[in-house]
Length: 311
Image 1 (cartoon, rainbow, N blue to C red):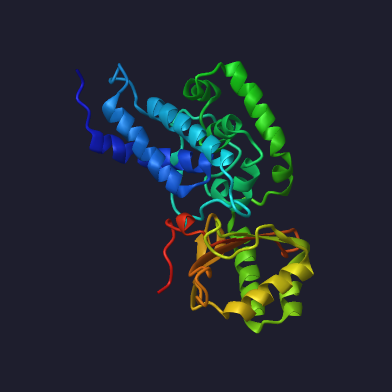
Image 2: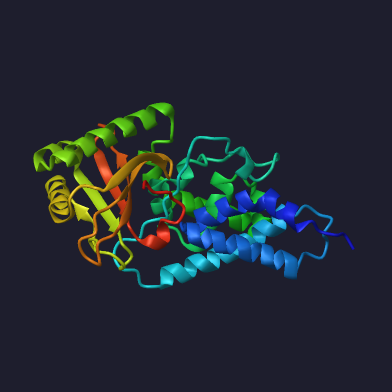
C-alpha cells in the first residue's frame, strides 16, 4: 500500500482548495472549515487508488462539501443584506491556484476579479451547482471533462449548467471592470476623494462622489447596528453617512488596503453603544464616470477574521 505524506499533501493543495471553497461559498470561515473537512476525509477515507493524482479527488470532495455548505447558508434566515467575507488581496503570483498545466484556456475571470464583491454578489443569482460549475470552469481553469469528473455528471450536463450560469451573469459581464493598474488607480483616487468628503461631514461634498443610483449595503449580521435594507440614491446615501458621523464620530484608526481585489479601507470605530461595531471594512465599485455606484460595509465579526486592523 502506498504511504501518504499528509503534510506535503496539505501544503501542495491547500491554497487551491481554499480558493475553490471560498468562491463557491463566499465565506472565508466556511472555506477554512471545508478545507479541514476535505483533508480529514483524505485521512479517514482516502481514495482506493492512492497512486493517482490527488487533486481531482480532493477537488471533488471539497466541491461537494462547498455545495452543501452553500445550500445550508441560503436556507438560513440572515438579518440584513448578506455580503461576502472581505479578503486582503495584495498583488502576487496567482498561478498556483489554477487547476493544472493542462487546464482549459477558456477561463473568463481572473483570480483577483473573482474574489471581488461585485463578482461574488453576482454569483448569488446562481444555484449552488451552477455556481460551483462556473467557478471550476471560468475561474479555476478546469476543462469540461475535469469539471464533469469533479461534479460527477456528464460532460453534456456541464455544458448545459455552464450555459445557464453564464446567462445569469450576463449583466455582470456587461458592466465588469477587470482589475488592472489603471482601474486600481481610478478606485484609489475615488476612495481618497470620498474619504476627504466624509471627513468634512458635508452631505453635498459626499454626494458629489456618488452616482445618482448609488447603493450602500451594510452587513452587521444582526450582531451590530446596520441598515437591514440597502440604502439607495445619492441624497439618501450622503445623509446616511452624515448620520453615521454624527452618531459615532470619525474612525479611531483607518488604513487603506487592497481588499477583495479593490482598494478599500479597514477601520476601528468608536463604540458609544453595545451595538456599535468596533471594526468595519468598506469597499466600493465605480461606474464609467468614476462615481461610486456600490458601497459595501462589513462589520459582522465572523466575516472579518481574514483581515488585520490598525491598532
